[in-house]
Length: 315
Image (cartoon, rainbow, N blue to C red; front, top):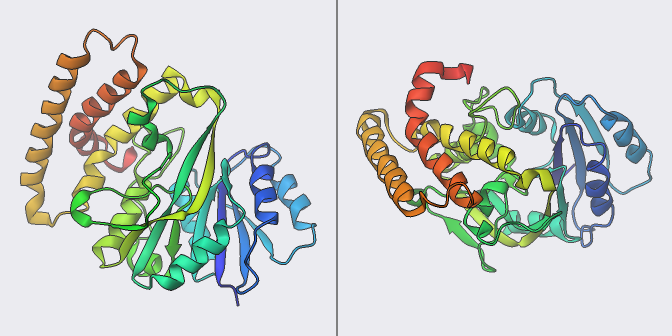
């Protein structure tokens, strides 16, 4: 019997994956439960398979299992992880997430002590290759940097805020009973503009079914942020994708008859945010990267309903 599954979804992670696996080799306080490592290779073209085989040959108290998922997109990789996992809980790590030595223990214990928690997220600190802009905290959460205090708390449905997929633990049965087989949003994928939002989609289904979603600051992760992820082209593309994904993730919260009214409410709200932002930062948009990213978010949130009406699932 397996109590806890650590699922690592990776794409071309031959240089990043070993760092994560080394951290998992030295987890402490796990003697009172059984756990496994599950690696989902999301269509890699590098030596990821070879790296995994090397670690599978290491003697250890836990098994390392490997599966290849050909459908590109983190949503498909995570669904495959749920299907193949043997644990009651599935803790997701990206291949650039470095957990502290007690992450697995903290994750397993929290689930046992919070039986109504369908999912719970980690405290995630940025490990930056280069120094980010001075005002970067305003947008850090969009790069999965989550510092939300040292006390656990339950996310309330009316807030519309969730933990991110990196460092997220999900109760397997809560997923199986409530998350559809086919995702609306694919997740990170080079061919999709509206790729972001897959975590919100998944957690919305679980929360709408009556499960609680929590923040657990005892689960700590260092998220490696390379230089290229702080460059203008990447960040603008990221915020474009987040904005375009807003329509489907927002509508998951409402009943069918409520949606026409809420679409209008969000359109007015997004238009107001865009205009206010332009008035405040119009002179700084070329020099202030954070302000430019926020504008990209507001504009594409405004356009999001039209984008999905036009392109539908082609996005």
